[in-house]
Length: 448
Ligand code: FUL
Image (tube, rainbow, N blue to C red; front, side, top):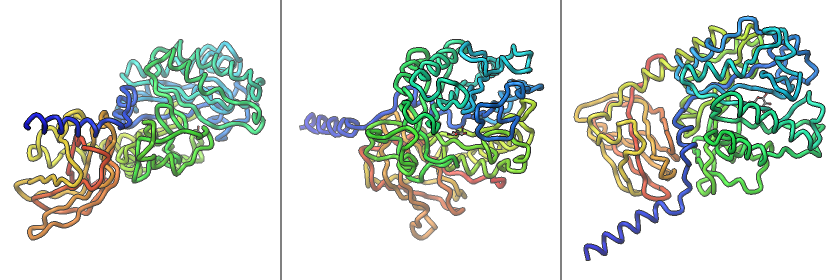
C-alpha cells in the first residue's frame, strides 16, 4: 500500500513536468543576466538622422576620442552584463573591416581607415568580463545587391566575418526591417541562424519571434503584466508579428522564447545633441527594470555614443544611479532568516514545491515594513504560476496585499507600504506543481 502511494506520488510529480515547455541552458544563462546594454553607432551619429539612406559618405565618421574602455567601464559599474553593438545599421555602413564592402570604417578618416570598432569593443568587453553581442541589420540601404536574392550571400559573408574574427559572440540581434525595394526578396533567416549555430553555438538568437529570445512587441522597454516565456510561432513572420501577443506570450505556447525589452535611454536610438535633454532619469530607469526584468523579461537599454565616440556623462550617471537605487531597494530581504533558507539564497534551483490552492505562510516574528515583493520560479522546470494572491496580517484580520498573474524568472510587485508580522500566499492557478525558488519582501529606497 505504501508503495502504491509512493508510485502515485511519483506519477503525479512527473505529470507536472511532462508536457511543460522548458528553456535550454543558453536561454537560462541569458535571462539571468537581467540587464544588457545596446549601443547604436554609425554615420547617423554625424547626420542627425535615425535611419541613414545609404548615401552618407564614410568621410563623416570620425569618433576622435573613441575609447571602448569608457563604454565597458560604465556598463560594468552599472551592473550590465553584455554590450550589443550595431555592427551595421540600415544605412549599410560597417563598423568593422569587412572584406565585402568599402562602405565601412576602412573609408573613414578615423585611424586613417585602419580602425575597427567591433574589434575594440569586443576586446574591451572580454577584458572587463562582459559578454559581447552584435546587431547586423538585414536591411541595407547601401549595398547594391540588396533586393535580390544574391544579397543573402553578402549578408551571410558579413555574418561569418563577425562570428569568426572577434572571439566569443554571445547574442546576435536580427532586426526584421525591410526596404520597400525588397518586396521580391526573402531574407534567408534560417540560413543566417544555421551559420550562428555553427560558428557560435552558445550565442542567443534574437528576432521578433526567436528562435531563442523574442521581441517584447514595443520599443518602450516593458513586458506585459502577464508575461509568458512561451509562444507558438507557427504561421508568424518576422517583421509582421502580433505585438500584443509578443508582449504577453501564451500560456499554451509551444516554444520557450522569453521577451527582450529593448528601449533607448534617449528619445532616439542614435546620439543627437538636440536630444540631450531627453535622457531618462535614474527613477525612470528603475521603473523600466520593474516593468521588464520584474515581469519576466530582460532589459536591453540603449546608450548611444556621441560624435567623439564616448557615452555622455549624463547617460553614465543615470545608469550608475539606477543601479545604486536598485541595490539599495533589494539589499535587505526581510524574509531572510524567517522563511526556509532555500527561498532566500538567490539560487533558482533550490525550491519549495507548492500545489495550487495550498497556502504558504511566513511569520516575521516581529513587525516589519515593506512595499516591494519579489517572486521567482525555478524556470529550468518550466513557467507554471498563472495567478496568486498575497495577504498580510493587520493585527486582527488578513488583508489583501496584492494579486499577480505570471511569475516566471522574476516578478516584482510594488505594493502600499504595510507594517505587519505575517504574510501568506495562495497560488490559485498553476500549470502544475510550482517550484518556488525565491521570495522577498523589501522596503524601497527613498530615491526610487
Ligand atoms: C528597429 C530599427 O529600425 C531601429 O533603428 C533600432 O535599431 C531598433 C532597435 O530596431 O527595428
